[in-house]
Length: 264
Figure 1 (cartoon, one colour):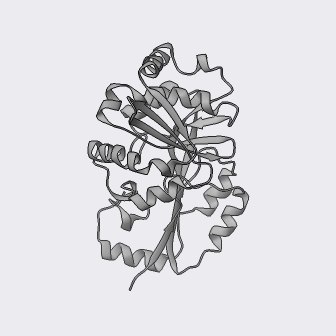
Figure 2: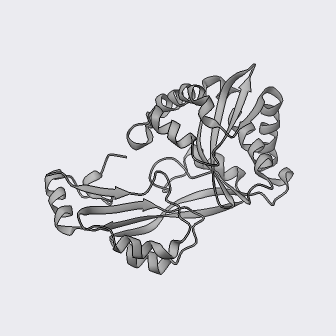
Figure 3: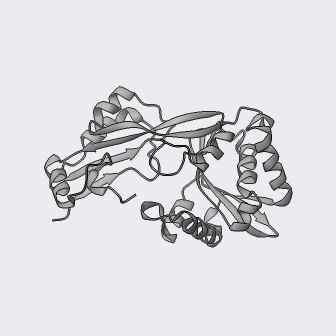
């Protein structure tokens, strides 16, 4: 017999009224086995109410590195970071598009490099169709770094209120050599200034903050603040959950839902 569970959108769940979330979760169909999500780090909710709602799992998940755009541009990041960015900007041309889907082919080429470099699999191995749908989300913005007319780095951003989330980014090997990421990030702070209050650079790699990885170190050097996202999990049908656990017959794990351990 096939069972169904549900999860919030990857990588973050956002909504306009967090006060309604506990009530809506409690009203979910008990035919669903479980629900899980990771909250927007800028979400405004009552911790106690959310913890009471998600009584199976609720804990701080990741630190997100954010840049306050009210800070003068020349004060964002350290001197060395800004020097890298200016050096890269002198070599590259930056182009901004509010129609990212037009550059889907360029993006797929760069993302293929990222997938191979980091052995990306599972939910993060988005399909072309998935990217097309994401790039058509209202307010999506793409910043491209071009070298002699060729895209060597791309970052896609999504608006949520007064926050711009750095959603997806990738570079070609040449883009890494040209420090395209530095150029795109620094340019984005100037571009979004006056359009939003914050740029959320995101967190580190994987599902744990136990050790700082290279990506976390890079983002933290730009950041003026950190914000915490929370993992939320709730068993909706205990009988079916236990049945799936028996079928899975896996080792003890803190992963939730446990019968999906290893899928991420």
